[in-house]
Amino acid sequence: MNSRIAQHKRSWKSLLELLFWAPVITFSLLLVKNTLPYFDFSPQFSFIRERILLYSDPIWKTSFYIHIGAGIFCILTAIIQFSSYILRKRSQIHVVSGKIYVFVVLLIGAPSGLYMSFFAKGEMTERGLFIFMAVAWFVTTYKGFNAAVTKKFIAHRGWMIRSYALALTAVTFRVYHILFYLGGADHVYNYEISLWLSVVGNLLIAELIIYSKAKSYLKTFNQ
Image (cartoon, rainbow, N blue to C red; front, side, top):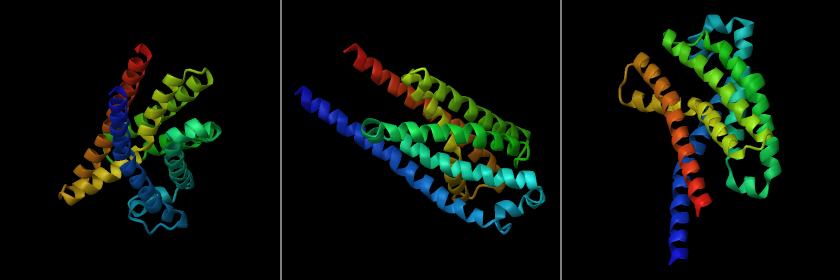
């Protein structure tokens, strides 16, 4: 009887993980697909046309391409990082790709994102949110790396979940933006609410996942 209950719980857990990861991976790959054309270095994209004066600035232009390149890499790498199979069977892949992820975030992604935050679209509150995202992405990634180095693996997992949640705001923002657009929302309102929902929502989901993992660990530990 106990084995059946345990098997039933594992089945539900696998189903929930599938329901979570299937849309995450799908929308992440769609984001990558839609971002790659920017590397034609053409100004004929609506995002760039809205910022054509900034695009003429070599520093902003360089930061833009560095940032989106780093973002693509981090989103794809992070998917590998949370694979239970790779962690169990191919741990060296986890270690190497994790180090690359940390390097890219700390030295490329977060700094370029911080610079671009000061020129972000929207009011000062939205720019402040972008600054928060860049700083938080740097801090959570650094803390995750430091926890791994000191072999505090539970803390490491928690910080990296937060780091990945921040990386995924690029994905969730576009999902919300499309949904509100289909709902007929005003463009400015759509941009602002999609941005806030993606950041706050992702961080709340991250904390729920961390809490769930910690609760599961303590339950197993106390048995």
